[in-house]
Image 1 (tube, rainbow, N blue to C red):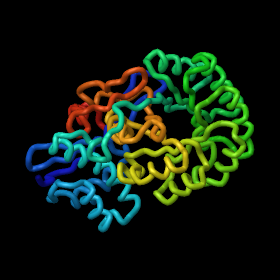
Image 2 (image 1 turned 60 degrees about the horizontal axis):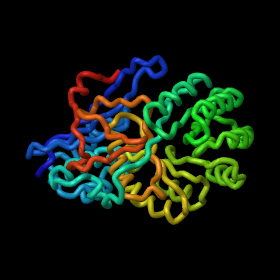
Image 3 (image 1 turned 90 degrees about the vertical axis):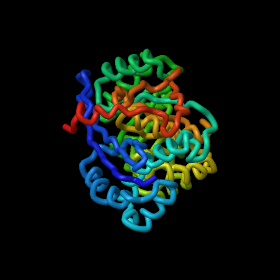
Image 4 (image 1 turned 90 degrees about the horizontal axis):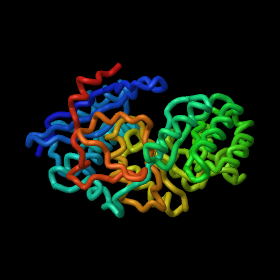
Length: 354
């Protein structure tokens, strides 16, 4: 089976809600001479699309589709020696795994380690800065939708941020998981005070409160034992991830498999995360296809290591012909061949890039 084409489509999914205007996304499609197709999510960026069109596609088209790992090694020995191109390739590689799973009639999870469970817990996340009242109202909608966890975004100032966490916790009750994403927005001199105040509201973690490259500052904050910490979604490479893990500077290591090294990097990091006694939480941003792609990797490890998968709220779901299977706030990862989902390619012309 030979690869005959690779296309990367940039999409924009509009939302009727006034808080989020649209969600940008990328759909990657790999074609073969046997009529099989592989699909994957990609980072919604024109520069990424150009790299796929001009570098990744010419490298892969015409090659035999047998082993995605072998193709990745070949790419790394060539243009993938550039770290940025290597990360971009990781999204296309998900489509290659989808294709390989379909050809062998097995789910992707069986090609990347073998699943040890069928479901993974989701946390719904807000993508924008909102008032305390708006955050509390959205959190209630999340709870009413069946989720057991909600991540809110801080950044409107210390007093308003604390008011937002307080009102959201009061609305949700004491047992609902609540995460707070500072997104590197807090001044370093005030972050200890913020963490100390947030500890009153039993948050599951405080995400990216400090510059992501300052692991020593994270370790100092963690040693104060105020709130659990999460970071990782801005780590530039595997070496920096290893430093974050080995220093035990956070409680939760985060990663987006679409843009930070894909399945291969995550599979190398998970054993280190487990040995360090830390936990992993997927960062995810885009469509329902992003959720499924991460879920296949997540269920290859127990929940004691890979604990959470992010579900942007609201999510662009139209990319799939059938809705995700979610029960009690957990994603049931499909057992069908490849990623186990059917792509509605009409989104390519229904939701053009804006």
